[in-house]
Image (cartoon, rainbow, N blue to C red; front, side, top):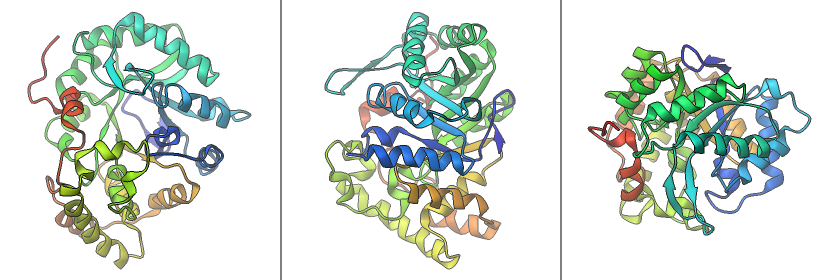
Length: 335
């Protein structure tokens, strides 16, 4: 178990990211997705991460079905909100207004079939709304009993500081892996200074570090990776070569690339909780087994030499999405 920051809940040392269960990476099997959630809970993984815009509510309804008959108090549900989508699933903006916070939350509680969300976070910073106003609205929902903790997502160091001054922040959810280490310079030190935990998504770099991806993997209908720079043909071969270098290290220890990639993130500090996104019980079992790894400093050093900072070819999102990430701005505007 690990604690989300100095003020957040106790959670399992890894969490289950549920986004892929709602078609983000192509078609999925609903029965297997629910069975995977059940297997996670049975294995002691109590942190489920979702977003109200994953499948436009589909993901929350799926989690509601999976949790039917389970102890609600034994599960920590983390929800992102604020992304606006058109009927064709196109992303059309972000809304962090206080009135929108309350509206989004009302629908989330209904879909999840619960009276509270454990950690509630804006999916992306709204440049038109001061972070203090958005967090203030979440704080009001905490006071009313509908939310337990404030979270953030993809926020830069300054907004993290401002948000935490408004109300204690449990954790910042942000991409962090062997291939995405941008938080180490400023964002992670700021979180540690303030006692804000980190829930790290993308620890397997959307399958790159899963060890079984090929150039044909991302061609499935609806797979968002087809639009991501690291999976474009001009970058994919370079990135897969990094995976092969890591595979050599993993096989020496009778492990998989995915397991050592998860183990590396776990090794970065007790204040970091990796989120592992999967839709299958077999991959979940592989991830849970990573909790028992004993990686030496020599092992970790070899991994970092095989995939040093900045080695990945291509940005983690396309140009339009990167421009929306407050965490990627060198000098975030103060709104």
